[in-house]
Image (cartoon, rainbow, N blue to C red; front, side):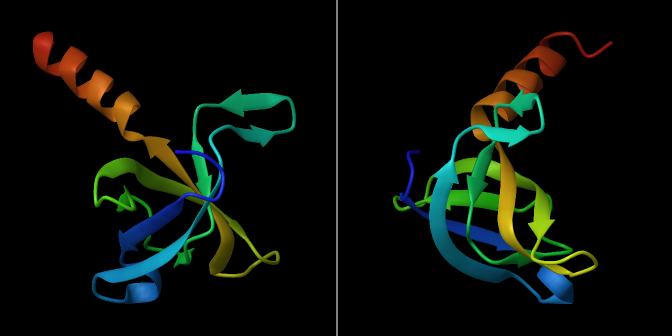
Length: 102
């Protein structure tokens, strides 16, 4: 994913049943102060309940999982930016866990 690529976010924000929203990729590295993490930042609408939902690219491929949001204002339940963990990290974790389940 690169900046401005179209994305679709699926989830249950604000208790909606299977809500889909579209947006654009903002960045593939989220910076929080001096900490950088390999995350996808996007602008598809989200709110409390979006975490754990998939992030799709224009081809319908899962490219990440929504994990956190940056509210518009302190105390808001909707966000301008959502952060997603890239699917490659999830795939690597699952492969390692399944190979050594102890």
